[in-house]
Length: 212
View 1: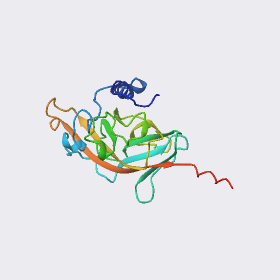
View 2: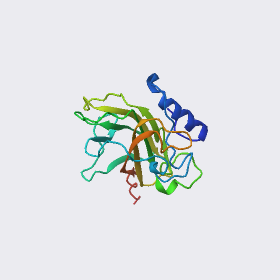
View 3: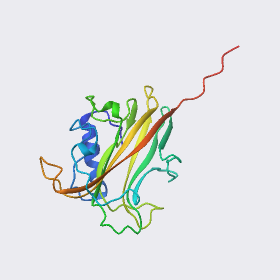
View 4: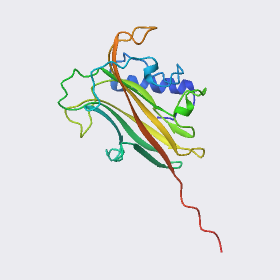
């Protein structure tokens, strides 16, 4: 999958994500800073659902090792050598044994708050190429290590370019059920909003030793 470089490419990637594996497409992409200038999901949607923080799963997993990138402080850290790629899985859902009815779809966006008011489509950190910084997906995915859970799982590949710098990004998440009313998205839908901190770090090679 190519990295986002234009609004047209971005739109195609988002639609492809919603249709991934032929699953039902009954949602639109998250709009934080893109189709709207809202700072968070709650600028449009109500935070009124039944899904508590304790049983909510929000994880960022290395796609190769399947290990979580969460540190002990709860922050996700994505370290990538400059010019190379790393694919992670965005994992969202409800834990095994949850008695509340599961959400029907999960939406998420990786947002650099400094980019909200810019004209670029992707609100990811500048200088970082990214394939899927936001999506909205019907619940029902499976992932080893998360047996018995109600999940959505999608890959995202990042690559720090020559212009990339270390950055702090928010992973904004909405668990939802029901249907939003057109022109009034606070009606007709249950939703809970969560946010996690993600630190992007560029790994540069050590400088070459000076010649004698």
